[in-house]
Amino acid sequence: MPTTVNMHEAKTHLSRLVERAEHGEEIVIARAGKPAARIVPLEASPGPRKMGGWEGKVWIADDFDETPEDLIDLFYNGPIFPDEQPGSGE
Image (cartoon, rainbow, N blue to C red; front, side):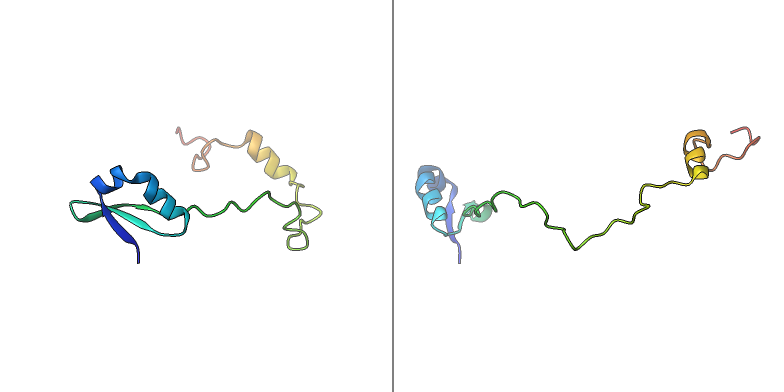
C-alpha cells in the first residue's frame, strides 16, 4: 500500500521521499486530498544488448530481394494515383 503525502510535505521532504522510493517504497503525492503524482523506484536498466537474439528463430527466403520487372516498371512509370484511368481527365 503506497504512502500518501500532501503537496506541502512533499516539497519540504522531497529528498527523504526519494530516498524511501529508492528503497522500494511507493509514495503518492496528493493535492487537496486527491492523488496527483507518484514517486516510485526506478527499475534497473537491462544492460547492454546481446547480438544474435533472433538467430534460429527467423529465416529469410533466398529470393526476398528479387522484384518482378513489371512491378519495378509500375513503381517508376505507373500512375501516381492508382485510381486514375488513362484519358479520364483527372
